[in-house]
Length: 276
Length: 350
Image (tube, rainbow over all chains, first blue to last red; front, side, top):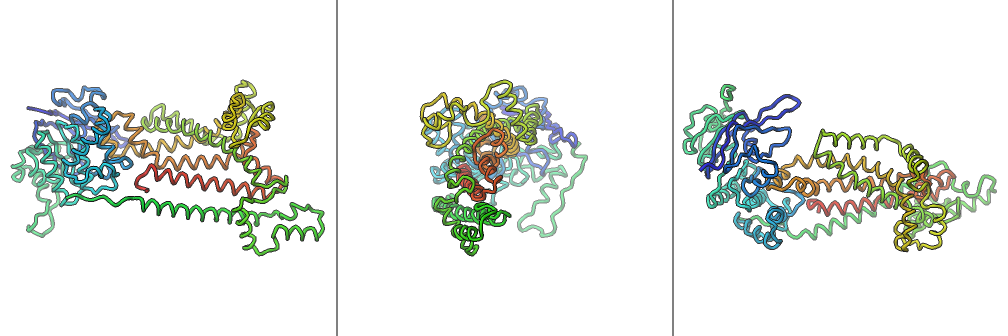
């Protein structure tokens, strides 16, 4: 069953320096599966993710032939209806909890905000749910974390809080935009396995945006490879290491391998032809 | 694996308070020192100012000894500090009245004016700044910028005179110069207990609403004028702080959660804007407390600004210095207050 289908998505910025096209005709569809989007910085992967939520900042403009989520045309929805989807139906985990959590609000207030404001739960009901959500991301003393401010948390804890916050309303689709790139390698693995378990258990659709191909290959079912705002290759994750496209091969080759050749890593081969 | 939180922040908070009190004491001492030095370097002979030009040598010498001017400078400073700490700011040469007594009469008038002006400035400036920040480049943004620019660039005395001419002289909507109509002035003196020295508060406490209304009609024009100047500053700073916060990632988070735009702006962004804005408001308030001399002159407002200016005109240095010390203390206390508020709104500063 298709949860999300995107056809010919374009995101452009009308800046003083001229029109910048960040995404140029991206199409994909997604069921309750895990789709990875990979590509180097500036390839348009983040903008693709944010377009689904219609949260591209002005002067950015989103255009698409079709962008359907669960039967609703996202391009035609009013801002008000779009707001109803954000949170309970589509959520997003961002890269760095240092910036994506409000620095002057207690973690608890941020976790409970949706429950209090949208679902009109009482303080104690909301609190109970927030505690449960923190336990689900394996935070051991949730009561204390609720009273903490974001700067008092480590990066790994902050990202778990972020994941807990986004999963509280049980969305159907989660967009994870480089959710572990700002974390230490050891913490990365933990956060990933937590995310993996939750998404699997709840049967959500996941768009996993990353520049780390090997990670995506392990973690996702299907992968889109983006270059300069376009999808250059789409393939099953298990076939990734056998990718044919030279750009994908390039991305793979510029990752160092433990026990591998210690010589200089090859530079990424970029060919304007691929972006046509 | 679970990372643990740092221990209770109370110890740090107490240490912060101790440091704040120490810096407060040091600042006040510095203030007294600078004031003292100014009193000594201005080319006004305090002895001559008291005894006049025709005094005999003996009279001059006697006065010099009485003022302690024959002592070494550091001793004079110690005496000055000691007296100031006991609330003795010297005696006015012009009136023979203790400076503290005169200042405590004039200061509430200034405080009342500056406070109301700041309230006006905040109530108008913050929403205007937010409006401009959320619609950059729009008509509203341009209007806010233009109105702010006018507040920045038009001289207060000119605006004051035009305001008086229009609203008092021609339209008769407001009371004229002074804090009350002449008829109420005398009544106020005898019938209202001066609890705070601020007419609005004292008349309200006494239940004299007729006088209260009259005081407002006198206060509204100068306070509105100063409030406009303060609004110009506050709206500009609010706009730039708000634009900065709206570009932050946590704003996107709030939107991803499906929060309505008013909540994103007035709760998520505003709480962060408040952190620097508190300092801006405190500065603007302090500026009004010390700097409303022109306004006080035009509106015949018997405040601290007028008091110091009048004293300066007749070389009444003890009055000038005493007034300066009081303004300085108000400034320092306001800074302390804004520092404490800052800690309150920004958990990272605790």
